[in-house]
Amino acid sequence: MRPAGLGEQLRRSLAVARKDIRIYYVKGPVVIFGLLIPLFLFLAFSLGNRFASVPFLISGLLAMTVFFTATAVSPVIFPWETQARTLERLAAAPITVPALVFGDVLASFLFGALIALVPVGIGVALGVTITSPAALLAGILLAALCFASLGVLLAVPPARAPQNIMMLSSLIKFPLIFISGIFIPVESLPAWGRVLAAASPLTYFTDIARAAMGEANAYPVALDLAVLAAFSLLFLGAAMLLHARTLSKRL
Image (tube, rainbow, N blue to C red):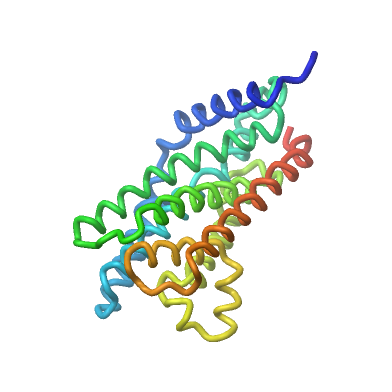
């Protein structure tokens, strides 16, 4: 049988994305990791730092919300489907592994980008002025793609139990929150902290959000967008390549 072309594989990716949204994104982890955890961290930080401006706080809440929402479910889709033995049917279907991975990424991307409207709406209601809406929109879309790709990349280890992948992803995600300039501006970090911050994609989205809301930013916005795009391509390409190598170990 002649392999389907790019357009047909893209349609199959969209079908996978629709399946993921219908089955997985109405479960508890999305609410807990995507909304409640950022909100609790935001409240704890804002109560303990009364001198922080509202735009500073809202930009941090936005960064955490997109990050946690886009990575809430994507790391455990493969283990869930392995455990339920539905991955075998997907593997036997006429869809390539890159198209399958892209479908999972697309579902998390759409959900992360849509949930970003919640903290933006909260900020506007509190009087925050979006000085660069185009930069903020571009940052949200790139960040949602980047973090969704990271989430699917975290699912590469062929674990059959979702909780094992959740533990791994938590060990990676929570340290990123504290080194990415959300609670302490990058320019206020010590030299070693600035080096760690530069290695985190979350740093660059936080920086875009700060700049778009009129706060001081550590890097030029064009650099932030370029680095986010580079991280997105790196994570997405690595996820496609590594999942193709480990798929047989899951079946």
